[in-house]
Length: 464
Image 1 (cartoon, helix red, strand yellow):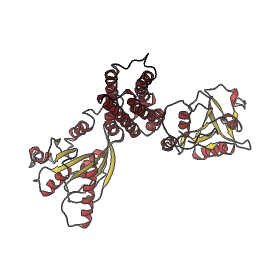
Image 2 (image 1 turned 60 degrees about the vertical axis):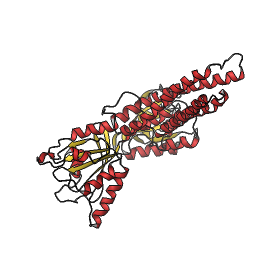
Image 3 (image 1 turned 180 degrees about the horizontal axis):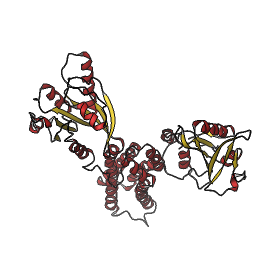
Image 4 (image 1 turned 90 degrees about the vertical axis):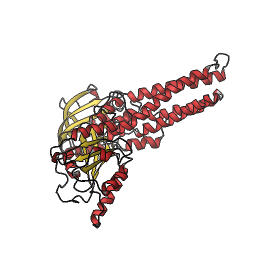
């Protein structure tokens, strides 16, 4: 694991022209390096003479003592800083030219350009934050909706750490008790212990499974739903996409087969993110180009988490419709009986439902007056969010690494439960209990290898 004691620097704000730009420096030589070219408006050259956790107004000068820019400098003295090292932040004007000039000045005077996420990695390695809080930092930066933001904020406040730490404490207590009883049977009695342990482990197992089960919904809320709009040509698919995106994203005509390629968009409906693919109309065709689009549509439908199937309700179902239903009948499907505003609806809900093997939402819609769209939103919510578009207040596991570690923990606890049910000796329990303890430690970073740490922080943005 790379953890040098050198001093690092990076531009911490967006790499574009802006009113203000921030350059961050962290390390044991941060003060002495910046002192070489910082001139305080108070004419005090040594930054250490300024009170920590304050902001000073002054100037950045080049190596020839020419003023480059007027700045505000904040100094956070170790260990009371983000990295637990001396940290300086230079607030300069946000032009790329001036920020790069100052960055080059720092590097030429002894700083090293920080790796992606290196400031947060130092905070983790110096014990200021655990690994779940470090990951929450990047999740907050990349949050695409309110749920992702709020859940990441909970994680940053330590809610995941607290839950995992409590589980580890309980497992550690049981391991310690067993080891003590095996080493000192005169003072620690194992008679009647197995039922007590079994009750405790079932409770731990239930908590792990609850967190694991939250991950599927959490991932949907955070990352969005892979959604495919499917149907025969001229059923209204492109019109639906335009309504959902709020713009004329797809060409809409009365000519069947207009959409021949795949159109992808990400849209937000209330607090649900949909990654939508509008496909070519599915039908048997001799047109070579259109057939390629149809084949793509079938492939995307097979991989989708949600299918929105549009039917022109003013026309009878055909073999093309039956082929589509056979393709999607085992998926999460919402059927829209479109063009219901025309008043000559031929296809009924019962006609469609009889072709599916289970109950599915079937909604009368019109892309002209947008009727049925709100009902479609609620149907999506019912499928994926337990009927609630507004995020619940409980904690969700949204990190795949955390989910995998919890599954390993659950499996290890299940092995101990099985050993108890098989009336095995207590000394067999500790191996699986230790595995459960270690798996939980992977989540918070207490049982984690160098390669994983490097991989996690390599995904961070520069300057964080």
